[in-house]
Length: 233
Image (tube, helix red, strand yellow):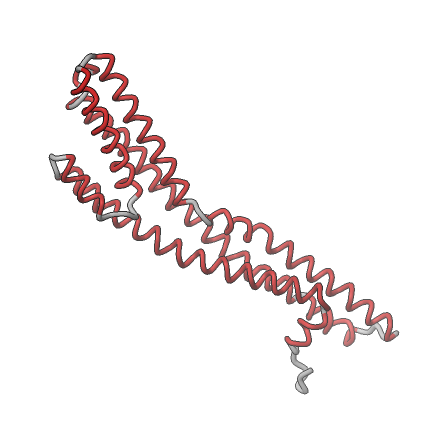
């Protein structure tokens, strides 16, 4: 214990016993995991947004789908680019099959639906990839305060047990152990607040990219319907 009457944090941690120490280690581990996800997901979403803007610029400027596909290969973090790549591969298969078996309206309608399904599957796959690890931030944000509160309650119970054993329950003897027990709540909030802010921020940015994928899918389907599947228009 410090001679100046300050709080000895090492003593505060050890006073909670194995349960208190375990709670603090769990919260610190959750905090480290959260910050790791925050840094990695921030970089990933920033690059995904940058590459998506670059792809959309290329898509609307270019008049050749094969050239757009080549450009999309160099933008692996753009979900919109990956959606296009999947749709382009499916469109190539459909056009080759139609050329081989004949170009009827029924075949064109089936081919158009195949491309539409490919776009939907690719968008869902990219959305799942974008959301990876984000739910963990929500779990940390919602659970950490309660875990910290449990550690505080446990520490207070031990503190009152020690005070009862000493038979001396004045303000001086009560204040220190209770303040030590409250460290668990503080650590819980330290883990929860950044995770909550990041969780909401990432979900907002992911929704923007999701809308970009949906809008692009609608635009791409409209383009190929007018220029490739002309008989279905």
